[in-house]
Image 1: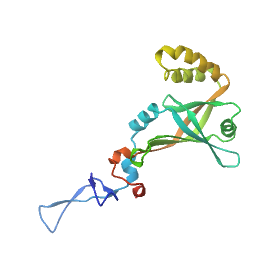
Image 2: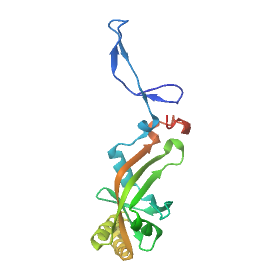
Image 3: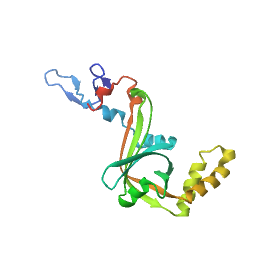
Image 4: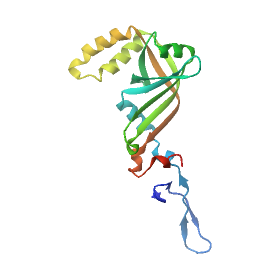
Length: 191
């Protein structure tokens, strides 16, 4: 990959062509690659990023169509984002009326450090004890080993008053500005 300009765009390796005016000369033709394509995570990177995270911004849709966004602690249940919601919470009211959901997990402070994943899809509500126990096990694994059993007991007591929410993705977007090596500027994105 070669940089073109002064941080204003990048070119990717492209197919070569034969130059008819200069026999025996091969010319490499480069097509511009968008900054978005350069910072996109692959499926393995998305999975690892989500597995390493713990806090997400969860957005549901109110009855009037406006978004309701709240921070939530989550785990990955069979590769999908899962969390507990208080039964009387606004997000539960919203999800009961409209199962559409969007979740963002991100980190980084400076532009060149920003990384994140947005999962958009539908939510399934699971009030059953089996799903709650599996989620409690996953949350307990985040506790120090010597505290896991006590943590699981506490988590199961909390789960009795909550509903498990599992996010089924229909679209995943990702970004990892560290792939740019610190050479990108905010105004370059989208080019």
